[in-house]
Each structure stands twice: as C-alpha cells, then as structure tokens.
Length: 268
Image 1 (cartoon, rainbow, N blue to C red):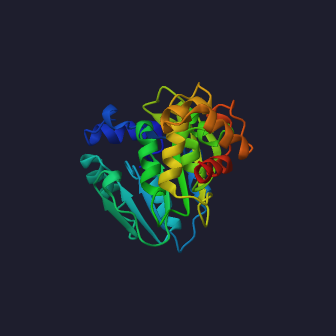
Image 2 (tube, rainbow, N blue to C red):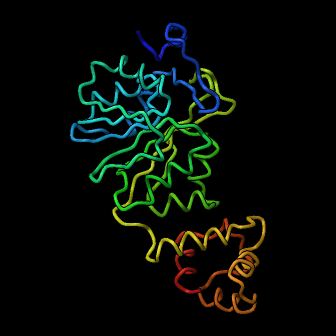
Image 3 (cartoon, helix red, strand yellow):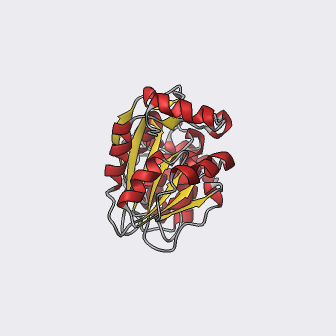
C-alpha cells in the first residue's frame, strides 16, 4: 500500500482505527514530490545515522532507511508507533522509539535530523538539538512557511539568531497545504540548517542568549530602551558604550547582525 497516496492513506487509517490527533499537531504528508525533496535535502550517505522526529506511518522513514546506515525513528503517539512497526517491517536498519522528542537523548556521534513536526514545538526542538555539544550535521524540518522565512530573514529575531549562531538556514522549497491530510490551515516549507564546524560567535553562549532576550523584550522599541530596562543601566552610559562599538543606539533589535550582538556581549 502506498501511504503517500491520499485515498490509500484514508483507507489505511480507517482499517487501523486511526485518525490525525489535533492536540499532537498531526498532519500526514501525501505528496511524493515533497517526500523526495526532503530526502534530497538531507544529502544522505550510506554511512549516515539519521534521527527522524515524528515518523508517523513511516512513509518518509522507509525512504530514509534505504539511503542511510541507520535510522532512529521517534514517534510520540503510541498507536502510530505500533503501526509504524508494521509499515516498516522490511527496514532492517531501523530503531523505533515511542517517546517525546524532548525526552530523547541525541547520539554522541555524527548524525542528521529529519523532522515533520507540529508547528507549536518548532522552537523547543531546535533548542533541544542545537544547544548541545554534539549537534546534528544537518537538520531538515518541515515547518510552517512563515516560521521558516522568519528564521532565514535579514530581519532578526530571538528565533533566527538562536539558529544562525549554530548553522546556516535556508528554505529548500515551499509545501502547499494540499500536500497533507488533513490539510493544515497554513502553508509549510522545508527548512535546512547546515551546522557550522564552530559556533558563529566568540562569547559565552548563556550571555549571548540572555542579551538577545533582553534586546527583543519589546521588539517594536529601540534597542537602547530595551537594554536600559533589562540591564538596569542609565541610557547615557549605554549610548556611550554603543557608540564606542560603532552601533547606532537608535536601531531596533531586528536590525542588528549576529556579529553586532557578539560585540555587545563582549563590550557591555
């Protein structure tokens, strides 16, 4: 049975008394061309270890298994995890784990992540995999299009900086609503994050994240106002320090590049 086919998928779900659970943000991918784009973006080799998040019914799992050395498939839904063992019975290099991805301990060796995840958990999953010593070489996420574009935008945010400090993000392809069953309310996109050999800033990461959170505490306000309130420092003192760093005090936080945030951490 070809579960990327819309009609066959519905038949399979009825047979196994399954349905997409809204509380888990479940939407099944039924577009063969998008599946192939995800696999291609992962740039898989026969030596690769792949962690798949949100394996679902195993449509993508099967394709990953054919091209990687080993696939660890994570699925939080107990019923889906049970059916997954049936649909991927021929995949001998597959390990299935029925658990919450945020409770999963990533490998202590080179690996890649491929994920079709609920939109509401995008940020926690990115933090879970990126903010650790052994990070994935590549992360492929199927996420809300607006969020993917925000991460790649030149207009920075806490989310975009939290990704760009660890790797280079790019939108691989848009994914229309009709590519899923049931169709979500918004369009999606394939996001690829290629990890840097070293992090992009030379400053303590806890200080970096603390400062950008302060800087974006009220995104519509000027940077100087947010820093003065968050750091409990007089504006005059901060203006002097920013000018010494050649940073315009009147800028809003979205306009600062990652290297300027690094300057701020080291200079304040």
